Length: 315
Image (cartoon, rainbow, N blue to C red; front, side):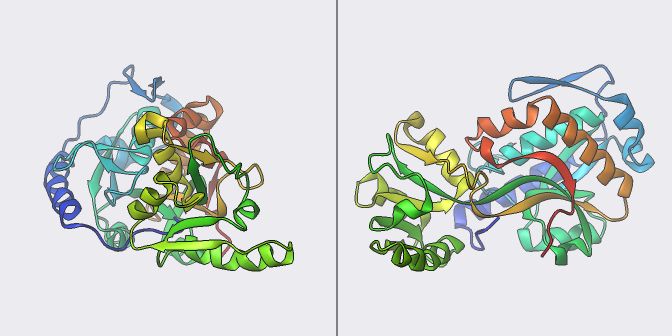
């Protein structure tokens, strides 16, 4: 992602610790779904593909599970169903359940601090990770990525979009809220020169310590828009006041958001067959429309990829 948080609140940390204990215990559950069993994800019944199951590494088939690391919470990708509970939800979690059902195994998620995810995969603690991880060349040296989304910065506006904001250029001359010390703030600052060249006024940037503070300014009508990660903007637009508080601006020239980069499922290089099987399973979910339905559930259909690629990052 473009602005992954590096600090947690005490409550979130406590919730993560609770979930770690609960979900780690689940990690030893080697129950494999029956071949004919179907799993429902985002309203779609998903059935095991025998050919994809057969292509899995023997160790995964024997275990019946794929051990997956994730850093919780990071909406809309990974969240706790409720604070203090080990039950997970979110885009990554749902996608993991869909991939597991297609492959005929279980994707067992365990919380892991973000900066420790790749080292934990290298150490053999996990087979893979699903945690909105940006696919980067430097990371490709130690893990392989199956890329499943393109996401960057998005624009959130008040319900009905009263200022008719349609693109980043339309922010020129308006007050815009953003969280301090983020890539989104850098994006707005760098766009000031575009406003000047177009002969318009600069963006009146209003930086706030927390994303929630920026959202309150938008809700109160103190700013025309808020710039934040597009997945977070999409979820906020969908959930706040049951969708009646905000709208997400979808710029057709930047479907994944501004300065979008690929997010990938990180897979251990020790199991290339697992990477290949996940890539094929993801493509199957793309082809039958399941991926779009999962993303739509979280208000971010536009960040879904059209093709399952491997190690798509070029820098």
